[in-house]
Amino acid sequence: MLHYITLENAGALDAYVAAQPKSPIMQTSLWGKVKKDWRWHGLLCTDEAGKLRGSAALLEHRLRYFPSSLLYAPCGPLFDDEAALRELLEGIRKLGREVGAYLFRMDPQIPETDAAFLAMMKRCGFRRNAATDFSLFQPRMNYVLSLNGLTEQTLPESYHPSTRRNIRLAQRRGVVVRQGSEADLPAFMALMEKTAQRCGFPDRSEDYFRALLAGLGEHAGLYLAREDGRIVAASIAGFYGHRASFLYGCSDEEHFSCHANELLQWNMQLEALRRGCDTYDFRGVEGYPTEDNPKFGLHRYKQGFGAKFTVYAGQFDLPLRPWLAKVMSLCR
Image (cartoon, rainbow, N blue to C red; front, side, top):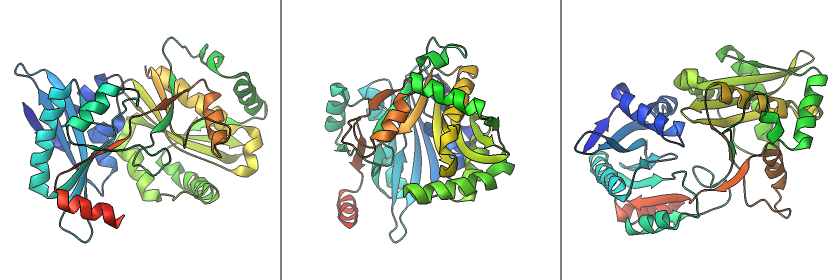
């Protein structure tokens, strides 16, 4: 059975996501409160006895110049088996007809080595995009740290010796990490704007980060690293169910030598352990971890924390209005 969920009655959906091993926070109503410029829809799939078998949290993005929209399930949907997925897809198609959507897009956190999943996607009519850069809605290439069996005392033992040295160096230099609040957003934004300009990615507005902290509430943390009274690095992490996720980070290149970023990561992982998370998601990188990759430095940085390189299956598109989906693909 299918149940359509709104932001106001999403408790069962959020609880189901929290209980799943991957617990993607983007598949909850919390993310719908963050993405205020997208309309949020939820679906739950149950068996006849009422047991939950799958869920989908969808963001609807309206096209600017055409009466249609894109339906997107970030890091989802979640489902027990193909029957549950097909039932969710029936509900998504029905919703698509109601809102005039031309395409449904999904990118669940399922490894690319799962041949059965890839075959199921093909049977269900999806088109796969397996890009290795940041051109997808969510990056395929990631680093994930297992926290299973670790404690606050043993966590650093999983790090590379150079990462442990850098953390100790930051401490000796007097770098201090504290958890911030909405009042610290102007300082965070000053660093984020510098980082975006230096690294060549588009920066987001202060209003977006304000909505992020407000929407995630107790499930988010803003962390600030200070050296000699000056904020030199900052980051935002999300915590939900079994999973902690590094969402955003920024730093002052003039203070790279104090290794505040490593100290921030360690503190966020400690918080993940305190909250009972068993996974810490470093999120995306570009390409494979080979020395000829121009972005290999970021790989090495995340490897230093003992994180495992993880490649997801990709981004999957299901046309709901095939002719319009084809037109939109030609316009990109």
